[in-house]
Image (cartoon, rainbow, N blue to C red):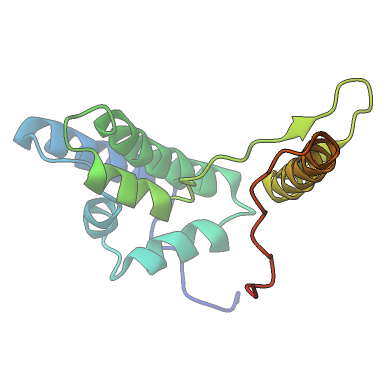
Length: 157
């Protein structure tokens, strides 16, 4: 006899029928699709139970895939809401689906193929500005003109 809790659904068709019924009810009642609503419709006691069930049945592709598709449909409904006038709630939920709210920009020097982070570029730019100011001061000292001093990086005067 196999160990562990018996499957909640005897076959994948029953699982799919329950999921379809939940989505139809949401459409009929004009309710938003939610993971919590899906969890309750399938008879699980917590959202984590649903996630664990999908994971536990990973070897049974049909179960895991059915749940993944249902979750993807819920995620899609939130993605559509990001185009609304008030997308804050939808964006928050999507972050819980693993979405990121940041941009990563990579810069390359043409011909060298070297990729620099924004921090590296800022340090190089700071160095070049400091070098240009030093050269300008030297040039103006030769010509007898005054150049403003750069602030001391250590915070001391």
